[in-house]
Image (cartoon, rainbow, N blue to C red; front, side, top):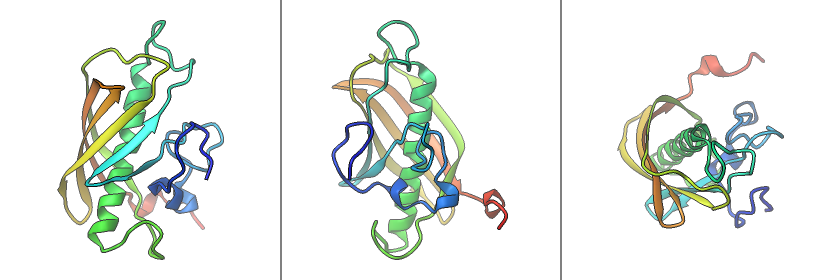
Length: 165
């Protein structure tokens, strides 16, 4: 499996989202113009990696904070989907449909300026999980440098978000 952001081949939760929920600008596999963020388990934490493009600039040499917020947003909803799926006894590749989550709350603290041209790594931890709600804490790194910390409350997407059939 080839990835447009030079990532290693692996299955990500976004690969299993139903088509009507796969259009997100940040992580939708069906959005030709999107970032295509991809989230997976890495032992007991979740992982998303991304290399910002030159146009993701804030000031010369540094990443625009909105990209980091988008990265954390999609990483966290993907992490929540993974956690809910696992809680129901499934792993990616099972026949059961993967849940789709949306963001109810996003808090991000920018710790240090984030350099352009480096692979960003988001490491997430599930800190609370219920039947419909998951709280995810994540850290964004450029190399070994912590650049941002976040807390996201993700919830199952309501059925009213599905397009009419």
